[in-house]
Length: 177
Image 1 (cartoon, rainbow, N blue to C red):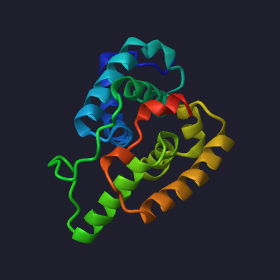
Image 2: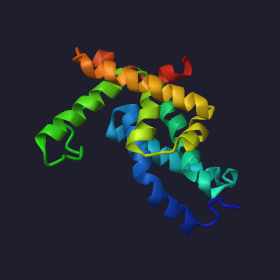
Image 3: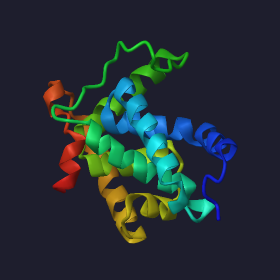
C-alpha cells in the first residue's frame, strides 16, 4: 500500500508536491493567500484520508483532486482578481517576459475554470494527459478536447485587452459547467 504510512513519508510528499499544488491553486483562485489556505486544507484532508491512496503513481493526481475540491470551497464570487503589485510574485529578470507572463495570467483569469484548469496542469505543471484525466475525473479523450478548446479560448482572451476585473469568472461556476 502506498498511502502516507508514516509522518515522515507524508512530510516527504508534502515537500515533493507543495510547489505544484500551490501553483495550481494560485492559478485557480487568483490569489496567493487563498492558494496557501487551499493547499493547507488539501494536506489536512490528505492526512485524514491517507488510507484512500492505494497507488503512489497517482499521488499527484490524488492530491490535485483534493486541492481542487478545497479551492471550490474557498473561492466565492466575486473571484479575487490577479494583483500585479503582489510582492510575492516571482519576477523574471527580463521585463518583456514579465509583461508576457502577466498578460497570460490575466488572460487565464478571463477564460472558463475548466479551460484554465487543463492549461495550468498541462503547461504550468507538465502533467501528462493520463494523470490529468485521473485528477479531473474525466476521460482522457475529454482532457484532449478540453485542452484544444482551452488553447483557443486563451488565444482569444489574449487578443482582447482586459476591461475590468469583473471579467474574472469564479471557480465556483465549474459546478454548473
